[in-house]
Length: 546
Image (cartoon, rainbow, N blue to C red; front, side, top):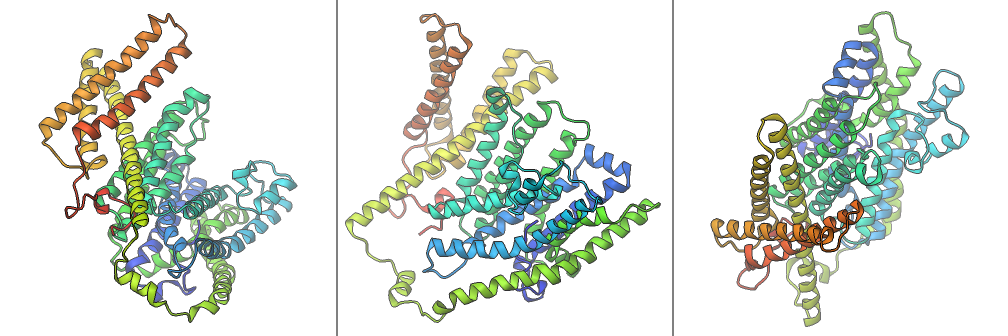
């Protein structure tokens, strides 16, 4: 996997405090899980059977890597002087990424090519010259070419994440981590619910990889004090719920090859990765063992070199001895490649960065910029109007995104609880639907009350819940009326036409519910200091409250 913080000074963890050491510790755990998976499944059949049926350790390690990347990449992207422009920040970020990633990657690719030409190794998919050339880009999987080494697949997702954050930086949305995480989770849920039926394809579980990285950015914003804890917990819950739904649709909904891991193995790996990261994040102020920090420092080398070691060193007669030799050889080779390739390339990149910034390092901040940090500058009427419009637009976007997430969660609760009650407990269909509707409506109310519209004034739970239920009943009747109108008065019996009417009624009901909630359930926003403005912190915004 990609380096994050360990190589920042090129000398390991000794020059850093424990505040970010936890990332190296987590990356050490992650690469240990990946190495255990690849070594164990090749030496012990019982271990392979266990991991493929119960918990896929390699997948767990990869997801921990993705969470670590999501945590640290925003800080890397936003690093620099306050007066640096967006293009300059992007150039510095991609220069740093290039020197961190590509030199060692190209060394591993050259080794894999040499092994393939010598007949010692065969790629998972037969490869021609174009395939090998495409692998130089590290993005081969994104452009339809096979990976020369299986572990390369994660690097393509890393590059995709970097590109997405870079584009968001250009449009000024890179700090809206809560909105981005919830949006990514919403995409996962949409793929789970609609990909198979609409396009006849298996939902891509890779969407959860990106959602996980965006969730990692929310941890970063919370540590920086930009968002509230409930926003972080909501993003984690949304990611896990949507990821579970996506995995159900992808694995349980379609036939799988015999060698593919079972559903429980993948699910426990995903849930376990979040648990591992949460524990490591909670212990971020504690000192970690030096060996674990060192393993995290060289984890990128370990990740790339392990596959080469498993090819070069043939299995021995004793499986335990084979596992020990493979692990020791991987660690030794990784330490060598870190010292000879990875660390020098990082230092070279830093020298280039210092050379480019040398002309501006001695420039002191101007009095006007210093004053802008200490004082609030008076704004013109036009600027005040623009700011009010911008804040209003942000408020609507925040409400809409949360409204959509809560609606999706309540929908999953409704469907899942009905299925559970009707198929597992013997409850009748009508009673099962009644219970699932009441529970999902309550879940929706709680989510909207304490999250979607938490910044709005409260008028009492009994009144709000009664009006909330009445609005949902009215929109339900409206949906039934639209479908009835299409079927009977208009005489349409085509499944496509009726489905269009159904989707239209859902869209119309969603708009009505959102507007009605704002108007009658969750009334006008609370004002800050009598100025009629919604506090930024009340929104759980990804920006710091001014």
